[in-house]
Image (cartoon, rainbow, N blue to C red; front, side, top):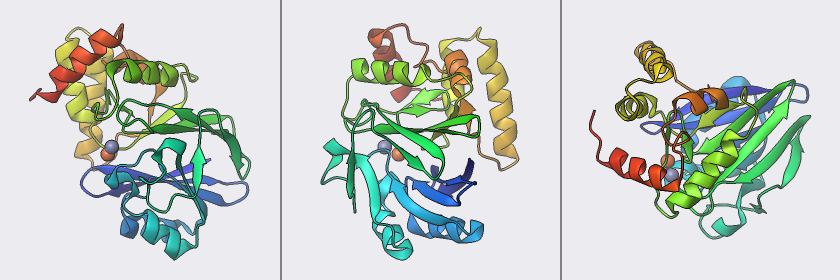
Length: 244
Ligand code: ZN
Ligand code: FE
């Protein structure tokens, strides 16, 4: 399995996921057509599908142009996002599974940021990756635009049950700000302190901080670590107004 990270817009990430054995690729979140098409061309990828994590424009704004340019007929999103995801042709549900080349793909419904948010779990070559959109960020979680703290708590629990070595690819580069909030919530958490140093070094070198791992999110992420939905809701509210 190979993942190309494609920076889009101001701080979004799209991804080009490839089964190296067969050369089949899928685009996760065609945020913006130009950088995505450029990445596909640069790597010489044959794209079979676009997988949208949720309906927001900064994750789906390139769907129509990318699908047309690459003649992709499979544009995936949750069944409840029908009418909200441009060019959507496939309406997935929690537990749906298929293959991309030799890679196994599985959908998790993870409402909270939006009600139709999904994650794509991909495994093969002894590796596993999960694409979490704006639900689970590195050291953070998305704003609760459509869902409740209860939904987000259950969704993060669902994601943190994946194998600890699972690589986490999220929708935005918000890691440094998230870790500053995390160290405000848990000043004594040494994993957070170490992660903040590492993230700052990567950003200073112009590198993305993705992927993280499920193990690292369990150690550092104040929303994954919230003991219940009440604590998660209070932390989400505090984060909304936090200025580091
Ligand atoms: Zn979003
Ligand atoms: Fe977003």
